[in-house]
Amino acid sequence: MESIRTYGGTIYLCKSCGQPCYEGSHGPEHFKEQWDGIFCPWFPLAGGRLEVEWDTASLDDLKASYPDTYPREPTAPAAAGR
Ligand SMILES: [Zn+2]
Image 1: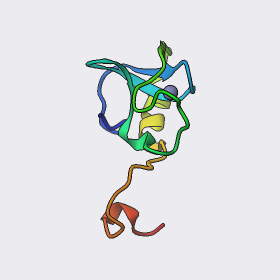
Image 2: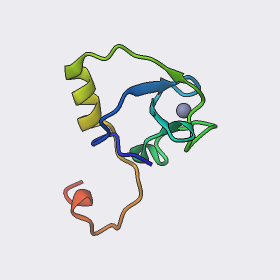
Image 3: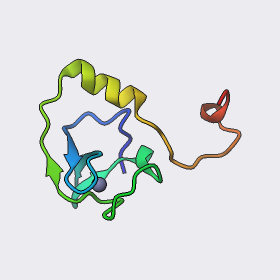
């Protein structure tokens, strides 16, 4: 499972839930950050992909600001300051 923050390939939208996904080795998959923040019946896979003509700036912004709900240790630095 990839991180949307670092994924370098093409990002699609899932036809089922409308959230970002990518083409994994077994078909469309969702990202690690979407752990429980999306309600996709296919998760962790994605229900088909929609191609999006992303503007580079908006894609960078999406990657940087996409909510990260992946479970981590509560003491992890990423959880501090919330
Ligand atoms: Zn989906």
